[in-house]
Length: 119
Image (cartoon, rainbow, N blue to C red; front, side):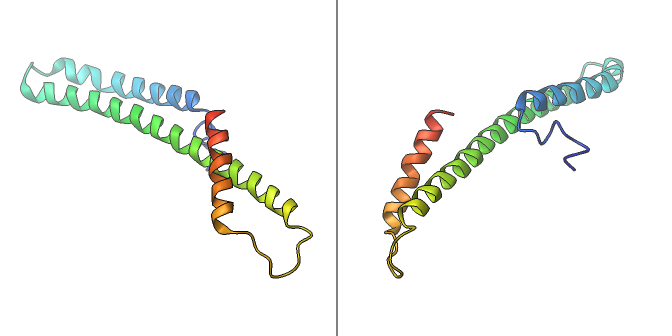
């Protein structure tokens, strides 16, 4: 699927916005003549309002996906950093000695905050 839609899965959300804009322009140009033919009425206003709402929902969805991608990539970097730190810290430890889970979690939160603030 990534090969068919490279702009959707690149992590570049500006490309995603451009792609949506292009699709929306085609959609708008397709139905614009039909809307011009319709007499001014409540139904026409409702259709125009629905189209406007679809645009706002698409913008919201793109922003939500951008946030989700940011959180995903930050979490991934944080987990890798903490895993490397603890692998290094505990490589020469006697068997049976394990790190405190609360300390691991606290380190993960610190590293995550660092990555989020520098994102």
